[in-house]
Amino acid sequence: MITKVDHIGIAVRDIEEARRLYEALGLKVTHVKEVEEQQVRVAFLPVGDTEVELVQPTTADSGVARFLEKRGEGVHHLCFEVEDIEVALAELQAQGMRLIDREPRQGAFGRVAFLHPKSTHGVLIELVEKS
Amino acid sequence: MITKVDHIGIAVRDIEEARRLYEALGLKVTHVKEVEEQQVRVAFLPVGDTEVELVQPTTADSGVARFLEKRGEGVHHLCFEVEDIEVALAELQAQGMRLIDREPRQGAFGRVAFLHPKSTHGVLIELVEKS
Image (cartoon, rainbow over all chains, first blue to last red; front, side):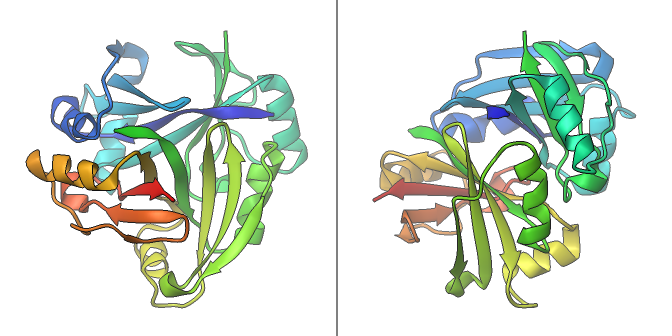
């Protein structure tokens, strides 16, 4: 059902500061963009068949800003690519897993859904079906 | 320098409970093993060119047990595969990054080194040169 890890989302206070580490390891930022509806700026650094996504809040009350306040910088979410997001969500519900999004919604790169942290052992998990 | 994400280490209280989620998403546990020197039991679930590694402490005072006590379940570390671990460590030091291991040490699947969390923006990062 899952084809790969689409990206690893890492919450950081300052993309320009945090990218230095990954660049020292040889990764390159391919693009940076604002995601207004989530009040974040994100930078993507491809690595193998996945990407590191650095996520910096652009407002003090965004979800990622609250995450930073509570937990500090660190891995914020894992995004898995799935072939068919409806099939994946139906299977998860059949297995008793809780979802934040019962129906997929449109994301920047395809249809996405988040699982509920109560069912994911502390990992915020996003699914994406790329369009 | 980095060739891929080797694995994503996730600290869990109980592998048998946590694997249900990843199995519902279609992943399969390929092997489970005890790592005595780290006082953990680990389960590997390949996904794309990387693996989810579920890490369960086997003693109450192991590093992962303390992580669970302090932060709860969640992503514990990211492991990146590098071509040449000495070159990687030298480059990181040249860029002013702090290391836990200045010299690589032997791990289960190759030579490994951990970066110091003070330099990694909250992410525990392991490098591995596969043997």
